[in-house]
Image 1 (cartoon, rainbow, N blue to C red):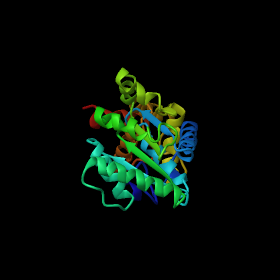
Image 2: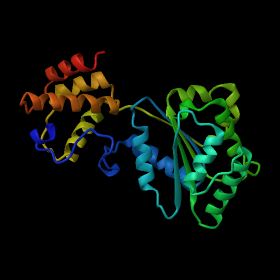
Image 3: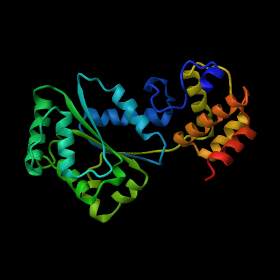
Length: 267
């Protein structure tokens, strides 16, 4: 609805915008560079960040940067992931029918990963999202996965991605053995005020708008509410565009943003 009013050719502030159209901050560039290093060298990485800080966006960008001829990426997002489900899901993404018993599936996966590396000359990259929800059993299984051939060989690149509490979980003494195996750690911060403005502008440019629809004071209000969290920015900006279109207003100011936040996001 608001797209037609603002003469937009695409819808801004959605989750399905192509990776090359997203805001490319220094932090995301650094994170992607580190994770490409992890993928290339079959290492273990842990990426953390607050809700909506752009972790999944960074992972999407990483995957788009990896050469399909050199890497085989497997992505898992399961809030109730168990070791058995992990093996089944990875094997399924490799095009294999998993063995029924967990121990058999584990050995099967090891063989498939070895074949992928030695025969097909591809590096397996396994990305586990929502990793802050992993159980102790699953985290212990991660340690076993990384303990292949007495620490002399990694069968894959493994990247755990989770909310900030994942850092606190891994600090516990019981996970010391896992922490010692982490090669790269990165915490992704939310956008600052300047990046929030650049983020909004980038989305509008993607949608075909070159002029500023949001005033500087409006962006200030959005930042004060969202604290740089992309998901919150998206929701407020979308609601504001709808509100402006309904009232035939072409410029969104701080008064409108405060009204939107109070009426739609304060409960």
